[in-house]
Amino acid sequence: MAGLKDIKKKITSISNTRKITRTMEMVAAAKSKQTIDRVEASTPYSNKLRELLDSLTGGQNVDHFLVREREKVERSALLVVTANRGLCGGYNTNVANLAEKWIRAEQAEGREARVLMVGKKGISRFRFRKVGVDEKRTDIEDKPSFSQAAEIAEGFIESFRKAEVDRVMVAVTRYHSATVQKADLFQLLPIVPPETADDAVEEAARQTTDFIFEPDPVRILEELLPFSVKHTLYRLLLEAAAGEQIARRVAMKLATDNAGELTRFYTGKYNRERQASITQQIMEIVGGAEALD
Image 1 (cartoon, helix red, strand yellow):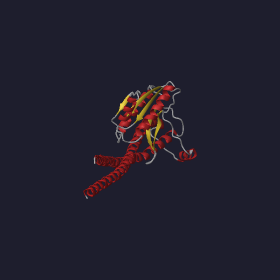
Image 2 (cartoon, one colour):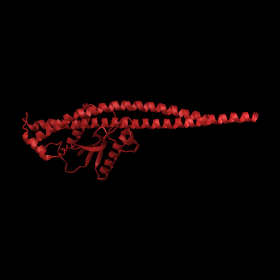
Image 3 (cartoon, one colour):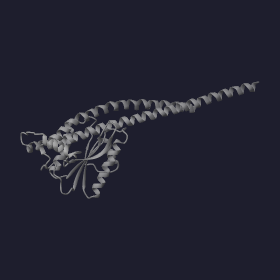
Image 4 (cartoon, one colour):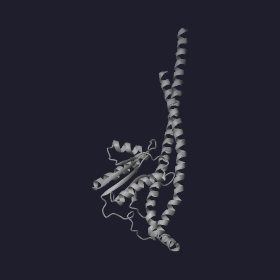
């Protein structure tokens, strides 16, 4: 009977765990829907901002320190975006592995690498692996604000302007669709013009569109380029938040399914052993009765 009691305790424990993971799955599903909506809501604005920048530049190179490539990169900065919480599969591990690989490559080339870490999980990982972190942020949750992104971006812009860093990279989980999210490296500074799939189509659109800018395009770019950096970083933080919630929903669904399979397995085992115990008791009773005869 001791074996049956142990199995019964396992079934109860697994069932309780399944209730928790199921609840966390539902919460993550609701949050993932919210974060995906925020990403998709920012897409038209991002596209229009890029269109405006293209119109201002007219397809020509702009002489601005935010787009100016350095002849030699000696110092780089890396922003690593992880989560404050776990239970989200390989979300944090994938970003941390990508960041560590980039840092090792920079050190191998003899370049300095300044690291800004966002998220408690990344901070703990780098502390355990003894990877240096110059600045830490744990205040960015699943609803990042534009002011938070702007604060980080302004620090990078100032460092880039003073030539304290020659390049700024971001290790982050990019959102491609509700089913595809990948850890990726994104160059924040200097600003890299987007690649166009069809240059002829874009050139035709540029020629058929006539804009009048007031004040002149140069003065507008002075304000718009720093803002575009802030908005780009804000968009990356939104995508990271969406990737985290989607990864947590998937991880909790797998945990719930596994708990269900374990419950069925131990329930079957419990029933078999209970039936065997009852059969054994009947045989003992029958045997005792025959001995009395």
